[in-house]
Length: 198
Image (cartoon, rainbow, N blue to C red):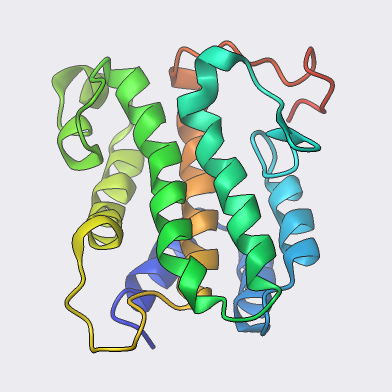
């Protein structure tokens, strides 16, 4: 178990019903990554899944919302590369891109563009709009995001995050994004863009 796995499992348990915890547990234990099954699980979560944000190789969102949805397109590409083996090389970037999705939503809600996630969630405007439970979940995730960006202190020839961590981080960020998106000023309307609205 990696140093972040326990926190990620705890965050997932606070966000997912038991049936989804069972499913995510199976997905996280599957080697190599079963991208098709992960995609199906992601779609069931609703709103901006990896399937929603792209139509083929084109972004399926308003251009003004690129900062929110482009990271999920990267996640889709990285998860697909995981199916080819050597998935551990994609894990840090999946955690990073998943968190960038959250960071963009937080910045929009708090009108705190360019502030990193940890500072942005502490801005008064953001705290006034977000419930305390969601705020605490974001704060608890913050150290994982910071590690993805900055921590190179793990042992030589190892990876800071496992495939399990990457899947969990992605799902945690998606669930938090679903909580936050209605507070953000987004131009994307999934019904108008030809994908189902959730």
